Length: 221
Image (cartoon, rainbow, N blue to C red):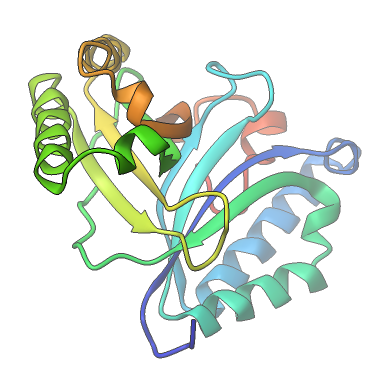
């Protein structure tokens, strides 16, 4: 894919390394500040950052960043290398693009508002459906999301950046119960039959002590 000025989006999950924990509080704060400056200087911005420690023991947080172009994201990556950021964080990420508008994250986020991020690809069962049946299935999934009080914040195509996944997205829910309602509604649709996916839930904002919050990412919290 060429860098034609199309906006790029980076989804990531992350956790601190032992090197991060070994830093003083001031050292952590300084590193975080430099990472934030790097994002700004590269023309990037945070779409959302979430704490995920309560939903998984593997990761402490996840987020999505927006860049003016692929070149802008590459510039940011170069800056992080110079900061030895990879020494201080264990993370996984994927890039994507979208033709759809980004929905603003709800303001006044409370401890009950929940976000689910996922990467996904269709299964053979999905490919076996007719085009009409695919459209009908996806329409029913959108109805289930709306009925649960959820909404899509961002949805991106990633097939050009990875051979494993075709897309990633983030959905917003009013509560954990709403997320569970949505998950329950997908089961009668046999959605798990038609999609191979991996997801993670989180709460937006900085709600934990510095030792956890600072390590989730330079742009989370």
